[in-house]
Image (cartoon, rainbow, N blue to C red; front, side, top):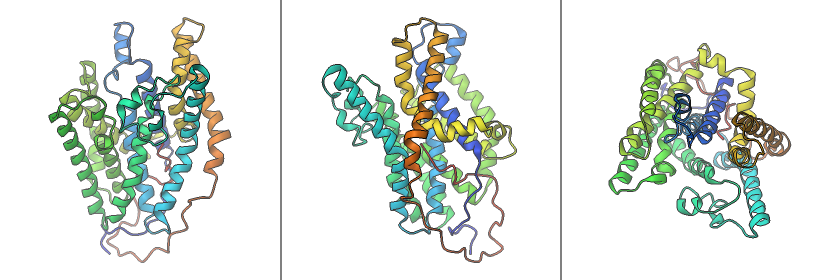
Length: 387
């Protein structure tokens, strides 16, 4: 058997650092929303608000999601009812909290205004990244604007397994990932050529699929390591320095150069960070593997993402204190507390359901000596919750 042939594989070792990556991503998202509208021109505030026109957290989420979900898909290749089970497990992870939040949004709006938010139907249909203008003008009391990334990921989950399973070799999987990156860049160029800007450049699946495909390449590296991972790891610091300098002087995803070059520079840096964190002996892996980070990432990151914007608005606009320190402290503590309650008393019972669990794969066939017998450090299946 060629070492590039796709075959049943053992379940990968758990790397807690990849759960820690989730906390880095959600921390960047929270910082982006908290500093998106600077109210002073100090150097410190300028530093904190570098993401003002170019959020990084969602890109890191997308790259990590692509890496983890590609691994999960590949490991389900030889199981029964693989597509049905894959979709069911994703639904159990995402839908309870997602639709629970939408129900809360609806009830609050009816209680306060007497009616449902305008155009609210796009959210239950997961179409907020398609009918973008409707999604942005709902006039809902609780914020929903951040839910666009949920629909993007869910659309990706519907398509990506079917494409990955059509690949018969690891080489074909690499071609698929590079093709996805190229098509995503082409989509952005077409949008720019037709003067389509704004959220169509950042909120649609074709626009962001390059991030997931970068993650897919990392997953393939797990099975057949090449120099790609080493190059990524070595480029992490210099690329980050270039990106931070660009952000300091005004990187903006809505501009042509920022949309094509800047956005994908950030995606490449995110892939490099994940590659570094996937190497067990690296400093990044040791830090992100700390129990606090891994537990928060594994259990609370999805809840934090869902609740943080509503609690940020509450802290800034309705908390009866003027101290920014107290406002942001309340925001942070309340977000973590609510996410903890949500996970342990609401989400976890759904995750414990046995619906959609894969049956054990058939016994591994004999593998010729040409196949790598010991997998290199890389991505893991146990980190399979991409939310």
